[in-house]
Image (cartoon, rainbow, N blue to C red):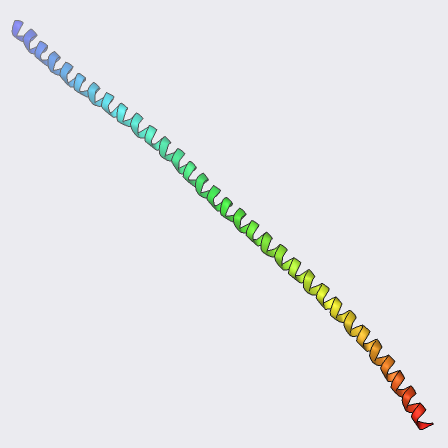
Length: 117
């Protein structure tokens, strides 16, 4: 009877050790799982932040390009207006010169008529 009880006690102690070992492994795995979950959350957060930062950099770059292109466009529009004003001035000069030519032609015709007389 006592031998049976000793054996059962040994088995019980052995089972307790196994149970403790299993519990220790479970707690260890639980901690690792928390750590991994935390790491994954951090990575997801970083991933979102990285994507957000990259997107913000692209937006900033596009805004810089937009500003540069707007300045360039403004400069080109200003130059085009200057050129247009220059062309109008030259057209006015040409119109005045044509009028002068017509007046000189009239004067030449008058002089020639006077010489014929």
